[in-house]
Image 1 (cartoon, rainbow, N blue to C red):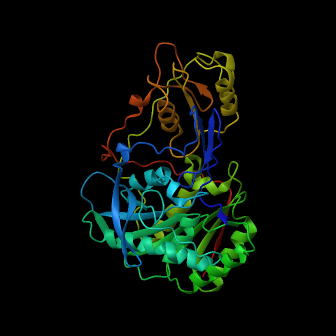
Image 2 (cartoon, rainbow, N blue to C red):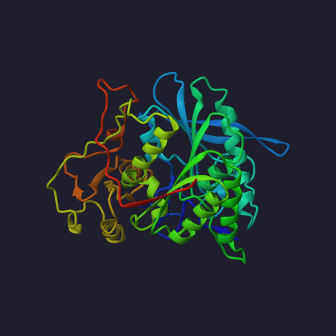
Image 3 (tube, helix red, strand yellow):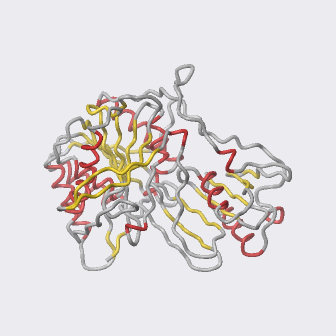
Length: 430
């Protein structure tokens, strides 16, 4: 029995490794010049978001376990309002799953004064304990995972920087199911739930997983008093609009309070919308309204200096494959593949012949540079970003240029223009 959830990774053996994956909740694609198969590498800690990783204590039966947990927060001592973000499940062994970071979502919340906490649940990544698979029982799937969310809440109540009275619980895919399951529990201080394409899709066997998922949502709705905000896209390859409508109907008919934002198609798969920078214009305006209704902060109060200045250059046209330096043969063909990808995207090269491209996700520029650098003894440099060649023979952007400053209060209040939302339809429950 296998699951296709938040993340999809397909490592293809051969001279060139190509991995397609979804980190956090984005459809991130990247490829690089490895000579063997390996899972996607996580980016280095983000100083601009004060990123840290801690091990949170939890319990599994009679055993004490630890949950690998990422924390992003503003500078200072707080207390900061909290967002607890819950991850999905990649194909294969959960132990091989990378630490989820949700940088796109985290950035939007940190700049508004929130701390974002992302626990890897039991059996995932470097968390100890074992992943528990309740089979076709979707209600149990959510509740088993919610145990670790609750352990994270208990840990946060011991932290002086955490505002215990202003908490939002969110999740994507399997993490969305986890968040909704947790909503049935007594969680003091939690004001609301956010569900990004939540659910669990099962492949193989005779499980009627859609019906089981609908039943789980009905069960959760009957026991949840907290309001929730849901996002499902038209071309979600996991949960199509008909299924999303069934899930919402079951939840609100049972007594749950939920607003469904049924937005249109997003890139190749709307399941990854919330992990893409291009998705912010869809989810943030609705989330902003939701947070205001909860009495939670929404105005930017911190500046995050994480923008990489990309120079304009006339070295070559973006589609001039012959101008690409250092690479030949199959490596040059990967640049042709890169040209077929959508923005945001980046391609990096090295004089040693190492290369990497990355598309979408948390930060394709840093992803491309870091993956290229793993295979090069000299600095990799950016060749192209989005639709522009940024290369020059005598200089170029490398990893040192992507170093970022710590989060700091802005000199003047930040009042950004409200983003224009994509075409959406909202359905509100009782």
